[in-house]
Image (cartoon, rainbow, N blue to C red; front, side, top):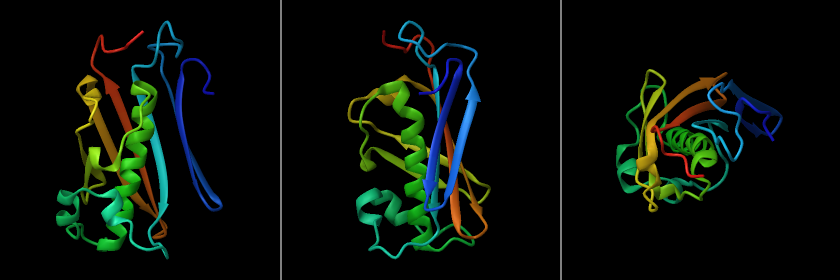
Length: 159
């Protein structure tokens, strides 16, 4: 549980762990005053010995868009987009408290470390969001570190 007036997210991969914490002075994270924003973080290795997860975690548009980031292989980009989706889901969950499938979100990482996120949640809950921002970077050539912040439009909290 995160203390009042804070929001946070954690992730780990083998012996490496990361955390993201932010002060949220706008609310106290109670049922009377639930959060207005969420943050998410994820860390993924840039390589995998497992069978490709591309068809499971990427939409058809994302599959066709692979291979356009300088210095990132197609296989690495699959893991990068997976990680971006994970951090966005972590940021959204405290706000909408529902399961989101991989086909309900599309991510497009850019060379500058930003990413475009397009949501099409079956429930329509994405209509409540004012902003969805995501970023990424490569760490030591071995990991992708991704982060996201999701904010609600005003008066979108369900009590």
